[in-house]
Length: 269
Image 1 (cartoon, rainbow, N blue to C red):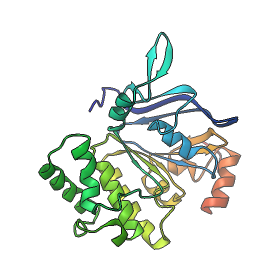
Image 2 (cartoon, one colour):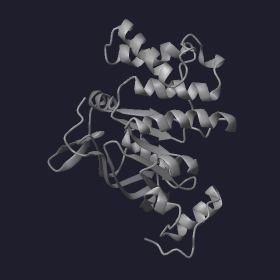
Image 3 (cartoon, rainbow, N blue to C red):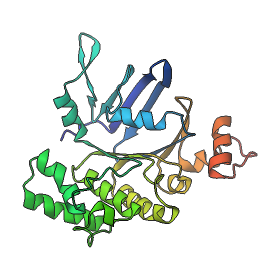
């Protein structure tokens, strides 16, 4: 695993993405330092999920570039042009990036333990005994040490999402991407997933989190990024983002989605 010498884990420069005639990312740039937690917020359709999927090359970009740990993701440079890389190289790059989706996407025929050991054994070549020991440690870490033999259908939504987080961590990523990981959960199950994510942040995991959980953003984020209509319209530490946002669009979003009280009298910093 190449962590590189740079302080930047993610360097996205002027990323543009189209779906047919619709441009959904319009020159998005973002850098994320090692150990930093960046939370991306914005209304539905603002491009948040698409951007995060581009970081993992689950979506191809048309312009710009994305680097993770100092190397291009999804592309290689040849004669000054970016050419899509081979599937083998892309798969190798993805090993450094863990991703947790809205839906849990667990293998229904495998136990919680089996879901976590599958990739280390099949992709990394870890022996079964070592993979199982590490998987049990991860299940314990996410509070599910007693659910190793349970199948997904026997677990609550919150428990399944915690298994999904453990599964991503089993690949020992240097970057974790979360795409609205609590949006498919019943309200009473949200807290248990957020608590695992808070613990990862406290342990120094580099994270990009797309979420509508403003309380999480206030408590855990080093920076909050606001996206609107395919662009980054504002980014700031949470203590500034939630109290003195510069953008009218951010103010409107916070008032509508977060119910946040923005101090209109306080000058923007």
